[in-house]
Length: 231
Image (cartoon, rainbow, N blue to C red):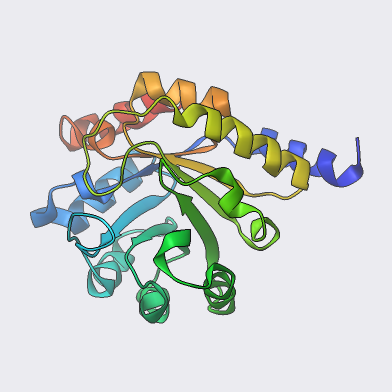
C-alpha cells in the first residue's frame, strides 16, 4: 500500500464518527441556548442549514444568525448553503464565523471557482450531492475539496425518511476518497437516526448530520441522543 494511502487509512482510524446536530430542528426561540446545550452534550460540529426558498422549498437563516451563534460554541460551524447563486454570499458567511462552507454543483455555473473562493477565505470547502446528483459531479474537484456531503433526503425540510438508495452512492464515494489518498470527510444528511446512522457508517460515512434525532426529548436527552448515533 502506498505511504500516502496508509496515512489516510491511519487518519480514518484516528477519526471517530463525528456528529453534527442540525439546528434546523432546534428551538429557534432559544437558538443560542440550544447550540450551547448540544455542544456540552458532545456534538462535534454544529450544522447550519441555509435555505433560500428557491434552490430548495424552504427559507431559513442568513449570515447574521451565524454571526450571532458564533460566540455560543467553539465547535466548527458546518454551514450548508442550499442557495443559488451561492457565490455572492460566501464572503458574508465566512466573515460571520463559518468554518466549513458547503455548496451544491447546481448552485452556480463554475463549481471549481466557487471552491477556490472558499479556500481563499481560509475555510474548508465542501460539495453536497442531492439524491439525483451522481457521484461523477465530483470528477474534477475531488483534489480541491475537504468534505463531501451526501443528501439522503431531498433537501428543504427536516424530519424526512432516509433514502436507502443513497447508500450505494456513499459506498462509491468512500472508495473514491480512499483511492485518492486524501483526508476528505464524508458527511451524510437526512433521515439519520440510530438505525440509519449504523447503515451510513457501514457504507463509509464519518460525519452524520442529525436534527430531529438529536433535538428530541429536550436538553436533558441530547447527550444520550448523540451517543446513540455514534453506533
